[in-house]
Image (cartoon, rainbow, N blue to C red; front, side):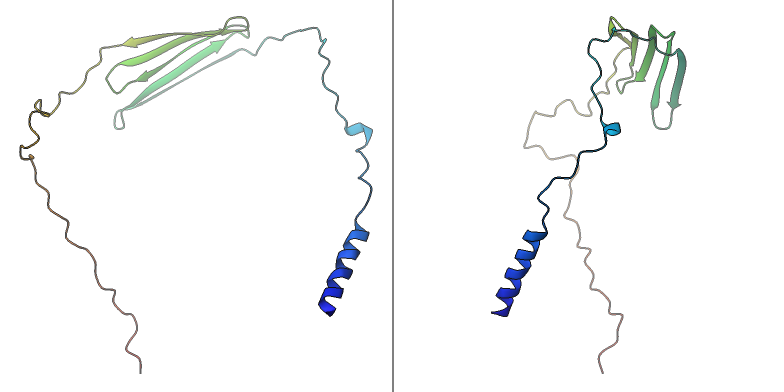
Length: 151
């Protein structure tokens, strides 16, 4: 009975302590107005740049690079990637404010694919496989006890 009365008093105290007003709005200095949509439409030129990099690692068969330069209005560049079929993909591009990104894609070299190991793959499903596999031996070991027998 006392628990019910204590709970009822607690709920009443929480309801009375709740503020009925919302917090005041932030000071006027923190307000932000959206930019005026009737701006002059003025655009600024970009910054000139010139960069490039090349990665060539024969151990991991990595071969790619990228170079690009800009005078602030027109950006030109190219990137190249060695493909797994022994060709090189070359993308040359231009970018400007009116035309956007305009790439041209080229491939250098001729695609080469390795010959399949056996040309008679679908001839017969009843033929014995070239290799036979056996079930693996179980590798389960009983754990060794680190503790001695109980006294």
